[in-house]
Image 1 (cartoon, helix red, strand yellow):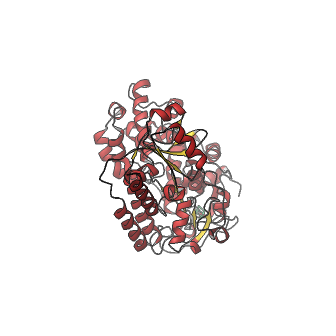
Image 2 (image 1 turned 90 degrees about the vertical axis):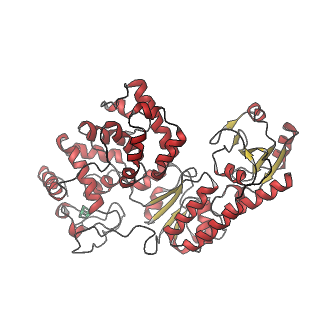
Length: 483
Ligand code: SF4
C-alpha cells in the first residue's frame, strides 16, 4: 500500500485512540536524570532501569556528584542494568563533560548533546523530545519493526527508518508518535507473534492483511490468538521449556550447550565454535565471533542468540536487537561471573540441575591457596605483546588458583621495556587464542632469567563456562609445581 496523507492521518488517529497514555517509560525528574536513565537503558529493559535509578539518583543527584563518583561504587549501583563497567565509565565521563562544558546542565542543543560521553543519536533524540520538548523521533527496536511491518519504511537501519518517518509525518506529531509506536510494538505488534486480529491499525497494515511477508521474519505473519485483547507473544525464554532455536556466538558456550545435550536446539554457531569436533557437521557456521553473519542468523529465525561482551561486538548485539531477535549477553570477567552465568543459562535453557552441579564444582575448586602468590604476567599475543589485564576472566582464574596477576586492566599492548618494568616472577603463555610455542618460552626465559615461564593449555585457561573447572585444576596443579 502506498501511504497517502489521509492514511497517515488515520494511522495517527487510531494509535492515539489505542494508546492515549503513551509516554516515556523511563522514570525521571529532570533532564539530567533522563539522560542517565537513557544511557542505562541500552541493552536493558526500562523496568529494570526504573528499579535501579532511585538509589542511583539518591547517591548521585546531579552532574557534580556523578563527575566525582568512585567507579567501583557506581558499578555496584548499576550492575543490574548490564554492561555496567562501560556504563559507569560513560556516566562519570558524562558528569565530567557536563561540568567542564555546560555548567553542570544538560544542553538542549542536539549537537552538544550528541557529543556527550555515552550519548548517541538515539539517546540524544530521547532526551531532546522528553526533557526539552524538541521534536525528535528516536527509532528503537520496536519502532524499527513496526514501521517496516506497516510499510512506512523499507530501510534496513534505524537511522534510515528515522529519516523515512520524519519525512512522512509532520514535526508536530513526532514526539507522541514515537511513544505510540513503542507502545504498539510492546503491546500488540510483538516481534515473534504480532496480534494482528487485535490490532487497532490492522486495516492499514499490508503485513497484517497478508499482502506482504513479515519484513521482520521473512515469513507470513503468524496467527494471533483471538479474543484475548492482548498480544499473543510467546512467554519469555526460560519459561515453559526455554528457547528451541538457539544461536551461540561464543565458542565456550557452544561447547557448554553440547555438553548439556542441547545441540538439537541449536540452529547456528560461529566458525570458531569448533568444540566438540562433531559440532561442525551438526550445526551451521554463521560467520565469526567479531563478524557474525547477521542476515544468515536472522534467516534462521532464532528465538535466542547468546553473546559475550568481550568475545562479540556491540554492533552485532544492536543489529540483532534491531532485527527483533532475542539476545542474551554474558559478561564474564571472573570465576564468580561464570558461576552466576551458569545458573542463569541453566534457568534460561531449562537445565538448572546441570548448571547447579557445574557451579558447585567450580566453587569447590576456586579456594585460594594459602601461601604467597607469585607476581604473574599472562600474555595472550605476540607481536605486539598483549597481556590479559588484572580485571579479565583469565586473570581471575589464575588468582583463584594462587597466582597474583599483575599489570593494568583490559588487554594492554606492552613493549619489551614495559614488560620488564612489571618484574614478573611467573609468565603464563596460554596456547589460545595465540599459539605460543617453546620458541616463545625460550625467548622470554632469556629476557627474564629469574622468572618461571610456562606454556598452558589455552582452552582450559580461556574457555569460560565449559572449561572453568578444568582451567582451575590445570592452574592449581601448576601452582603446586612452581612451589
Ligand atoms: S496488523 Fe499485525 S503486523 Fe500490522 S501493525 Fe498490526 S500487529 Fe503489527
